[in-house]
Image (cartoon, rainbow, N blue to C red; front, side, top):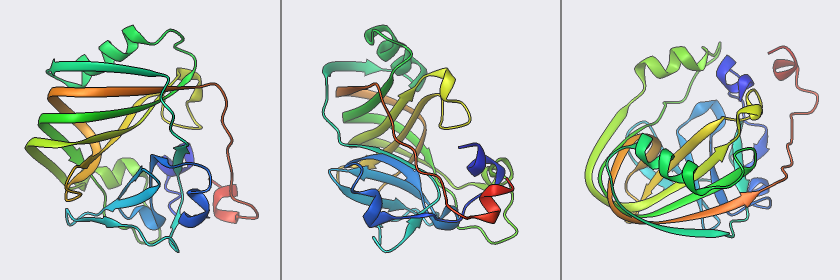
Length: 210
């Protein structure tokens, strides 16, 4: 993740290869071309024009996290007012804060705010510069699924510590990286994960000099 933050946006793994490692997850695409949502083995791409579609599996990704999703815990929730409130509920439910957790939330959202990013051109700017002009979207009364992970603090540099969630609406017309939400009712499924496998680019001068 630190390489992505620094501006390393070249795709290094083909999407058809990525799906061999998991059917659930999040990420981005070559040149930072939108937000990735992997759900039920299908890779969706939410682009800067606000449209979402199934990704071309011949495409590539510079950063993604996937898992074969099998929940260990199911938790019904109601009337959650904010993203922070949601995090507090999950944090109070899980037993070991130093493990990885895949989080899937299916329900009705009274409000959801997301963002995505447009494709970048070289020389790439750091992600902090790119996000200053990121398209932000807000919707009310959406049914759909939150997809993502809760990772422990010690993963900093390798992945995103804390919560990193993307959204996909039930009608597959809206999504993105989640900034804020409130929900009326939902079913939360959580998978506890105690190991991970990481692939880094081989013989890549750009990655080697980040």
